[in-house]
Image 1 (cartoon, one colour):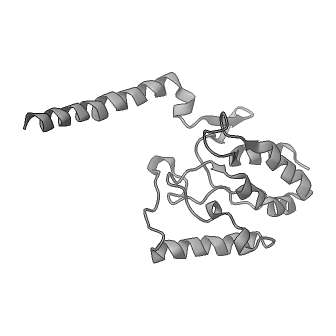
Image 2: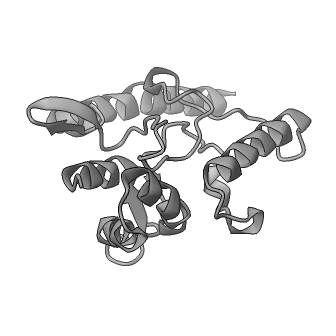
Image 3: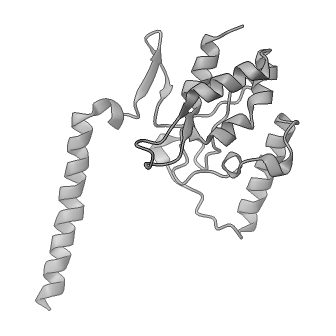
Length: 184
């Protein structure tokens, strides 16, 4: 009877006080990262490196959909399983909208990440395939040659750290800012 009580106490101490305290301390040591790593242009914060945001204009690359409308204060997924009819309807609506906005894409060319929300709801990155799927729309909206926009995507690809810490990705915010800096 004493062992379960001691184990419960140890787990409460570890995960109720020590672990949150450690996270708090790391946040104090790295305040910019704890705040989402703000990105400033001309001295004004325009977004966050680690927090996705909604881009609605055709001239901008769009990130993953968000189940929480990109609200960093209430991150989370829809928690609906793949067989849930409501989730299937949401994904179909996202797919229809994406194909309408990107008429050069065929259904089978659409990366899953462009129609499904991430677990956090605020994923700031896309895979290279997710970015390349939007090149024609962004190029047309910006009146740029598609090759120039594709080159911007190529330059924005960040490889995994040491080759094994996650897949290559593209920061949607950084890519959009790079294209804004190129203004035709």
